[in-house]
Image (tube, rainbow, N blue to C red; front, side, top):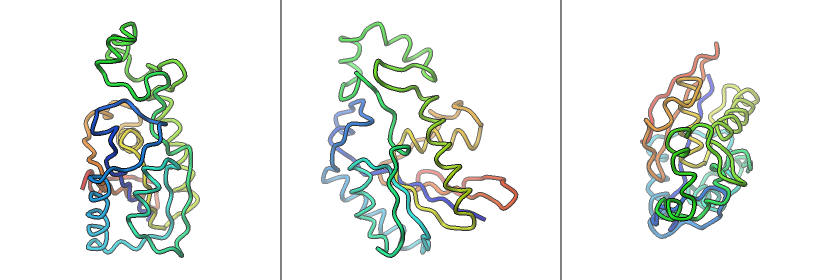
Length: 199
């Protein structure tokens, strides 16, 4: 069987300020650094023997991966396909700012959230397709391995929903804290289950 450990990056100041940010590239803040130090301890206690690592290429994921202190002999791959949702012209804004500056978006964001995309951005449906394509490629290429994936809340939520429901229906039903670990197992016959979410 193949096992995938998804770890959400640590906190950034953009998280703290509740900004919509996906492709923006802030560093971890002090809280985020400490969260990943805790995650490192959790991983060590769990005694998971990682075979290969994949990560979003954005700074907050790279820094999180660095803090996990994974053995340097284990191959690390960085991918744009594991990036968070691209919010386009809404990047770096609070919900209040969006209400004030782009009032025409508000209804669609609520009522058509699966397919809504801001100018220059992508939809959650786009995100899920991009992420699932990448993870399917990874799990098929590295069968019977233990794979570590460092990514973003939107990425991991879209993947949990994809593998459990084959759509976005479950997207909002999972809380993923910064630095949390989610484990997915792929059986040899292709059956998939989650050992735990948001540990």
